[in-house]
Image 1 (cartoon, helix red, strand yellow):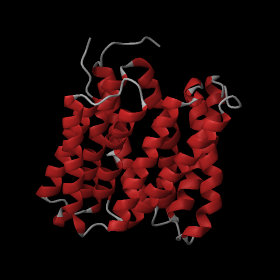
Image 2 (cartoon, one colour):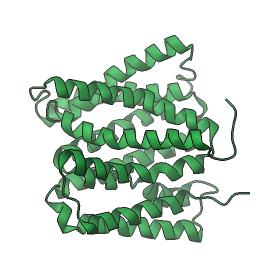
Image 3 (cartoon, one colour):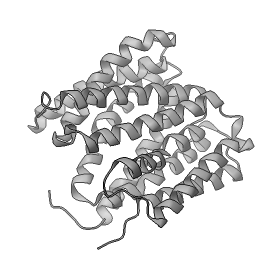
Image 4 (cartoon, helix red, strand yellow):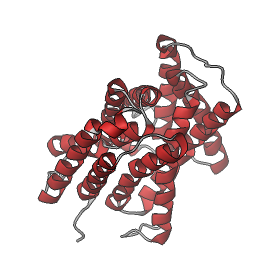
Amino acid sequence: MERKDSMDLVGAAGMVGFAATLAFNQVVIKVTNAGFGPVFAAGFRSILAVGLLLLWCLLSGRKLNGLRAALGPGLLLGVLFSAEFVFLFNALDMTSVSRASILFYSMPVWLTIIANFTLPGERLSRRRALGLVLAMAGVIWALADKDSQSGGTWAGDLLALCGAFAWAGIALTVRLTRVSEVSAESQLFYQLGVSAVVLTAISPLFGDLMRAPEALHWAGMGFQVVVACMGYLFWLYLMAIYPASDIAAFSFLSPVLAVGFGWALLDEPVGLGFLGALALVAVGIVLINRRKRV
């Protein structure tokens, strides 16, 4: 694959489509939760996604390399992935897509704070510090917005925020450990494989496994499986071609689109104050991810 120095139209279109898919997936998770217990749904999704990943490797000739060499950090990656979706799936069962998304996709904010102390070359510049302040102000504003509170609960909001922290932990694990040396397929295999075992094992602790699933819920599960496997691989494919900072700058689109989908498809309340908070988070994430070109 030819490496490019800047984002082009093809890459931008791909990232917009990917962001829209992730945003729509938040709605799908909430709808699917009506037919499955949230944690069981996350584990069942991982089981099916592992099968899809292995089929992809077989058909494409790609290999799961370095699994033994990166066993320790790979298992950590899987545990963090499990925690992320315990939090997210339960959050979407308890709060609105709009509120869960703006909190879950605040991950770059928390990653930036942690990276400032742990990763070389990730010190806060004035621009990134301003983005951090704006994004955090947006999160606080979103939580305090009265117009959107009827669609959510504080417990669900807290779980979505915990999911963001777990996601940040995954990013740090990839950056700081030997798991970064293995292929994208191997990284994904660790996450899906470990979570398939962990989430399925603990799912009885979270209530009924099934909630009388109908055809819509099974279709939603199928969509999630494709997103969990092929969506992630597509993102890594773009990461191998375009600058990471350009890719990251598109991350603000997912919460924006998720709020729109939640309003349009689930009739979730979204007031002007909440939209203002969303704008602060979006601008903040862009400033956090923006880098000076050399």
